[in-house]
Image (cartoon, rainbow, N blue to C red):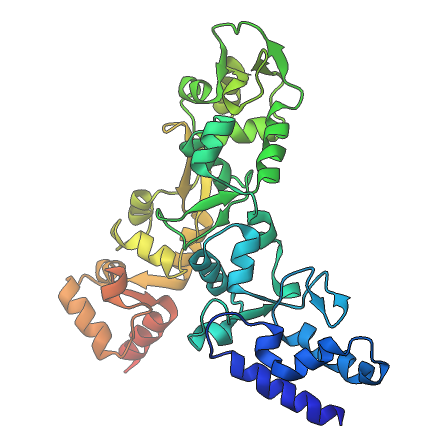
Length: 374
C-alpha cells in the first residue's frame, strides 16, 4: 500500500545522504523511477506516480524547472549548500559558513555531510541568499560609486547600508552589499541635491566637510541622511558619492550646538567610583555591571563612548570596592581583604577577571554589623 511505498522511498532516499556526486531522481529511486517515466501515458500507474512525485518534491533537492514525472516544478521544497551557492553566485564554502551562522541545516553540518547533501527547506532560507546574487564587494563599490572603504564602514555603523556578512565579526569580516541597497543609499544622498557647476570654497565633499568641522564621518553622514541640512548639492553631470557637496559652515554650526558630554570616560569613571582603576572599567562593562552610551565630546568634536552617570551611581549603590572599604575603616589593602575573607564575604566578580576586588555592598554591611554585634 501507500505506506509501504513511502517507507521504501524513505529508505532509498536516506541511502543517498552518505553518497557522493549527483543526488538525482533516477540515481535515488533506480529502475522503478525509470519505469514510471516510460509509463507516463498509462493511467493505471497514475496513483503511484503521484505518490512518488509528491515524495520526491518534498525530500529530494532539485533545480527549479525540473520535470518530475510529467510535471514541471517551479519552486522545489529542498535546497542544498551547493544549490544555494550556485544560485547566489558565491563559493560553496561561503554558503556553508552562512548556513552555520544562521543555524540552517544543522543536522547535516554536524554530521559532516558534504555540501551536496546538507539540505534545508527553501522556505527557511531568508532573503539574504537571494540578495547575494549580483551583490558587490567593497572594492567594486569603490570603483562603481566612488565610495571609499572607510566611508562604507561609517555607513554600516549608522545603519545606512546593510551588509551581507560572509564571515564572523571583527576586522577580517568580508562584506557584500546588495546592489538595490547601494542604489537606495545613493538616491537618499542625492535626493534634492542642487546641481553645482563650480563649487564655492565652502561647498565641500563629505570627507572635506568632515575635516573642516573636525567631526566624524558618521556625524556628517547622519546629518545628510536624516535631512538635517538646509542645503545639499552635487557636482554637475555627476551622480556618484564623490559628487555630493555640503555647506561646511552649516556642518560646523550643527556640530557646535551638540549638547555637552555628561557621561564618564573610563578614566573619569575610575576616579568617580572609589577603589577602581581605569583598566577595570572595560571589564566591568563586559560583565554587565556598567552600561555605556555615546555622547558628543566638544574636545574630540565627535561622539565618544561614555558611561552614564546614572549607571555609575547605580553601581556604587549596589557594590563597594576593597579600596573604599579600607578607606572607611582605616585598613591597608592586605588587611582589609583578609578581614572580608574571614567574615565570609564573597567577591561579586572574579578579581583576576576585572582586576579589582568588588563586593555586594549589602553583604559587606551585614557582615560588618554582625561582627560588631558579636
